[in-house]
Amino acid sequence: MDEKRGFKRQKNYDNKERSGPDYEASRSSKRTDNGDTHGGSSSKDQQNSKPPSLQQLQHAAHLAYQFPVPEKGRSWTVSIALPGSILDGSLTVELKTYLAGQIARACVLFNVDEIVIYNESAKGLSKENLGKDDYLPKSDPNLFLGRVLQYLETPLYLRKLLFPMHRDLKFAGLLNPLDPPHHVHLDDRSLYREGVVVRARDQNYSIVNCGMRKEVLIDRLVPTGSRVTVRIHGAERDKKKLDKNSKTQAAIAAMEASLSDDKAALQKYFMGTVVSPKTPREETGYYWGYQVRLADTISKVFTESPYPNGYDLTIGTSDKGTPLTPAVSSSIPHFSHALIVFGGATGIESAVEADEDLKCDADEAKDMFDFWLNTCPAQGSRVVRTEEALMITVAALQSTFLSQGI
Image 1 (cartoon, rainbow, N blue to C red):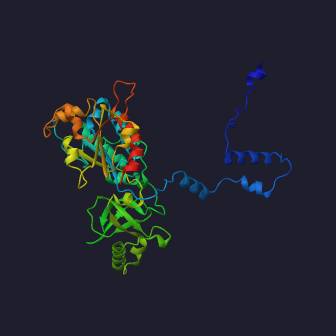
Image 2: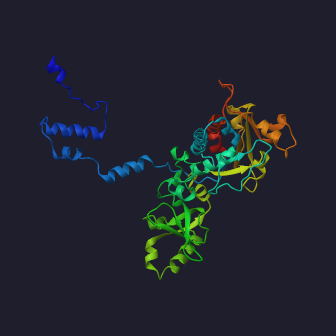
Image 3: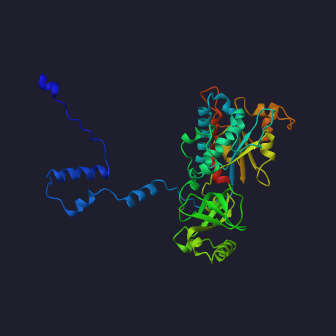
């Protein structure tokens, strides 16, 4: 008995369920060490037992996180509008931030280009402090939601530059990054990058931090701290893939000429030109993140549209709407800019009643939209939450948007 008590069984941490080249290589190396060759080992077997090199691991990681290449550019857009009051049901800042993260993640998954946060009560918003360092958003859920959505859409390498650390956004850093393409390295087709202007080089040019091994010298003077979309030139190895636009070439040539006397500067910076944030989407088809806009009332969601001709397809969501069937989906016409509006706990109708600019009551809310839809007609719960309705609706309409967008 004493001998059995003193005996400790050796633990085996080898998981027999594992598989893959690393596991097979380790097994073959163990057989070789034990002399169990079963017919002898060759130099080829010894090479296969070597661990993968750093270059191989980096190549595998690049393939794992590579975005699918779009077939063509995309000029049409999808916008959503929802009230910031949906955060009122969350009791803590952590839960409010997590809810904002759910909304942001759904918008990125389904290529939403604009998020409009409207106030469904009669009280107006105070937007003058949005984006400042001393901004405290807890007092207004609309501002808080807008602030967190902006933070989450910002690439990781720019967050410290655009959003100084403060107590209201510390929980947002715990969320998973959204990872639209402007969060990853350049590829052969997309030569664009998001950056922040860090300083002015002279009276004509500014320097941008794009999270790369070199800073980027851009073709104009932009205020320090501004977020810009930059078309990079010289970051790619294949010179044949340089942009062939004559104006862009002229701008790059002018910058290189101004630096002809400073050869160190030519080696220190990449050359780039500032483009519109919509250019990568329109030229390459890559999703380039969303823009956040605040609206004092639900009517200003429509009247303050950033598009010159407004939204040519508007969809309102309600449990009293028409069920979204294949027949209804096929009746949606071609569009350039689509807008989907979601209500809060009491629906879109309460926001319409509170809007003094609208001369209609709750029963006439559906007349504001081209389509008044119920995207979850067979719901098992009494209430469908806004973040749930968002995911259901954009998923149900995605194929229709892909076929009808022009």
